[in-house]
Length: 282
Image (tube, rainbow, N blue to C red; front, side, top):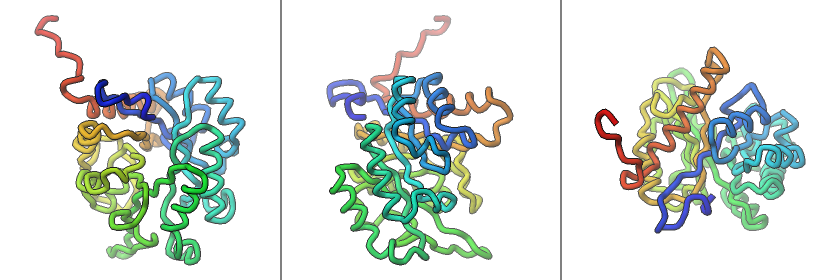
């Protein structure tokens, strides 16, 4: 949302979206309600088996009702959404179409699984072809190895890491980086202008699971990475994608989402733009 982030002469303000996955098992309407209540800039919709996540007219109704845009469509390329929208390239094409229909800016996709051989064989070029044909930014997400009997197994093709791959756009997920034991700050710096989207989250780096911890609750240099984005005036969307399934109440879930938004705001506000500290006793 470059209009909201301003020109070089204006204070930098990052655009922060709330992903529907952050409220799972709740749905898209609940995500819009939480995003409006907490002051998020937009919503990121993960397309799942939930019909509302797939239907442009219902999504547009939510945008109109809440006066809050959808900035991102996450294609149904997860292992658990393999049956949504049929064949692999159909998923990408339909996600691109939905992105245009709801006025979003970017599609997030996962790289293919190695057993999807035909799909994987021309994935890098195929993503570029769909992107150029539709005019939609398609951003490929970093993933992680699966560990079997203590050994890393690469199940994504051409690789779980987008570094070294010829993608035009890359989505960087801090939780996935933690599981893969990668340095997010170094990766984001290496990607430079190819960074198309960010999933704000964290991970411990001590498990094979995709934890999606709150930012700052893991080992990734999340704050430093956001500070780097602010310093370079990065023009993209930061999508909060944290797991709130272990929250013990609706109030705690709301608190976690508010904390994640506050983390994003604090660490993308350059020191010169931050509000002045109050004097003692003020």
